[in-house]
Image (cartoon, rainbow, N blue to C red; front, side, top):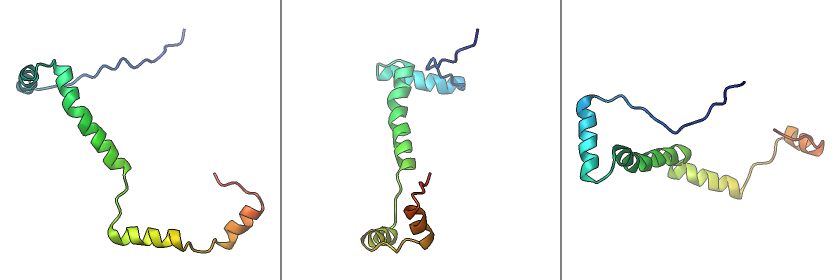
Length: 91
């Protein structure tokens, strides 16, 4: 019978005992369990890291260049025009 891989959602961390004690104490001060404390503090950071990686930030010069190209696009290369006329679909 084939083995089906399922994600249990479980994550294991190896911590120095003093680091675990610090996290556990901080969690108890916030009246959370350790998992809740880590999730509350790390999920927003993870979401910010993802958003930052997915966002392209242009300099003012580059932004102006993109806007200029959108307003006045360059002529299509002849090769592209021929492919479009032939009905060639780009991947």
